Image 1 (cartoon, helix red, strand yellow):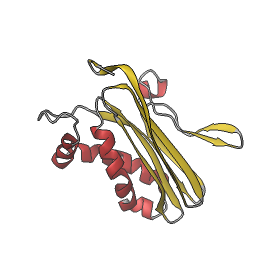
Image 2 (tube, one colour; image 1 turned 90 degrees about the vertical axis):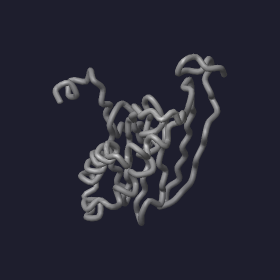
Image 3 (cartoon, one colour; image 1 turned 45 degrees about the vertical axis):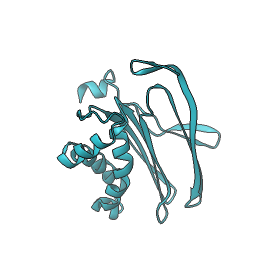
Image 4 (spheres, helix red, strand yellow; image 1 turned 120 degrees about the vertical axis):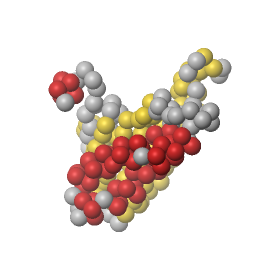
Length: 177
């Protein structure tokens, strides 16, 4: 496909597929670049994140892949290092780790690392961002945390269970916040 601004003239439909198993579950992930010039998304698929614990996440890059890559690399280790995670307070640990990602991204070290992930090494700063949808499964309990409009669903007993709620600017709760 040829280039047309930030889009291709036809979508890149090649799929990257990852599958595996651990902690008594099997998983599969598939991603496709689509119309964008470069793949902007990243993910975590760690069935064996810790004993009895699995971690899955999708980071949907906006304006580039840099922040999505950064989050995919750092989210898991920062979650494990969180004192509330270590104490079994998973909801609070997820919330704190989301906020920590923002803090780390604005530090000079974070900015330098993000800049190193740019597909075009032109010396310019990155203006990328990403949505995040993270599911931590601990002893068969799923904890979902999200920011942005990426969705997470669970297929169970032949029905769909919505685990996340979109954060969109036209959502009344988001407007009020």
